[in-house]
Image 1 (tube, rainbow, N blue to C red):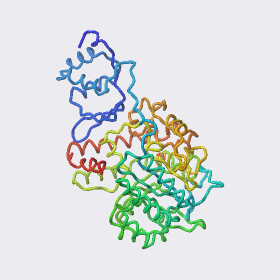
Image 2 (cartoon, helix red, strand yellow):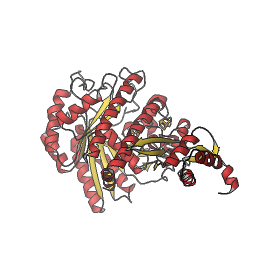
Image 3 (tube, protein in one colour):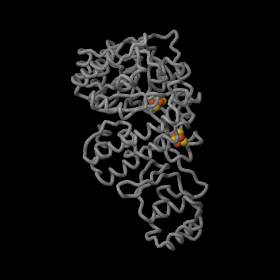
Image 4 (tube, helix red, strand yellow):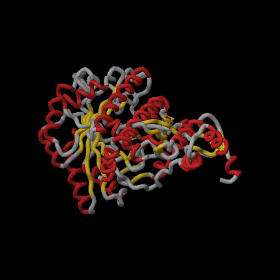
Length: 479
Ligand code: SF4
Ligand code: SF4
């Protein structure tokens, strides 16, 4: 190192130190990487977080403290951007180029639903859809055009994915069957693979439907909020609760559909925050293989919106379930808490997101009219329309949406260590809360950072004590 280089001042980069399994690590916002820290690197980072230092000053201080291996540790920290020259900024992750091939298509087969869940984003006060004058059910011609468009826009992908969504998806089951047949034949003809999944409220599951889903290996996610007293916002239009109708159907589904794991998706609301109880009910009493929780997307004034106290309680329970996940992982067992497995998979993969999710990138939603939208939650919204299946994606509108949602444009995120995973959070939620799909979801920042910290610690423990368990994430990604 030249004398001049020794005088360059450094600051600690956006990074989050954590411990796990007796080891010290740092999670780097610049890259999304996790870096094992030697004692020297750890001491240097602690010191650097107290101010601005030249490498010479840091070296002198560490040597005086009796720390060994200082030069090498500083070199590593600079390479990893855990130490940054003053005035420099971390390089923002590049978005994929325009025309990036699609990976997933979400087909909203209908915008109709036979339930009237009180919090539903499609019908409630927060709705962004403008379905007036548009078809309520997708027809086969539109679905076929959508599949053709999708295959054309994903040409160099060997394997692609179609998700069926609603409204209530199974209200248009005849179309679902035809699409599975048509897309399967098309994929076969092109020497490619397509797999399918759907989300349903379970009210219309019957033996023939279940048999079809099992035979075609269609992944199923059931929207259910727990035992009867927790599932109370999921009601029919006349106010009648849905639990007693769906419970036997779900049991039938779990007994007969063995070709894919069956998942439950729980929406947490003001009075429905007992995650542990819900989790036990859905896994132990009902037999779901995976359970994922999502706090309701709503304006803060909605009656069912969760306040800060509720979010704190949810986080404490997430920590408890994450610790159960850890215990299972150390014992080489899978655990059904999918919030933990999904976040840990992303940490393991080292994702560094330019955008919070695949919306308008590798994924688009298509509504019954054939309009293309960034994802299923924006379907039928004229404001967010990105084209039509007959004419393809409007690249200018797509570019505008993606530019607005890029993490580098979100001021508060630039100094946040959680940005490689969060990147500002869901575009739809941002629109509902702030009227701008590109606004960072600042109401969740503390929560996101604490949850990410929990998962980092679990990841560190697994990496130190049973690293072989992490291999299944590599296999899952490859498949
Ligand atoms: S939205 Fe908040 S938590 Fe997410 S990256 Fe931005 S500042 Fe961090
Ligand atoms: S915008 Fe929100 S709802 Fe849509 S895919 Fe992204 S995270 Fe999911």
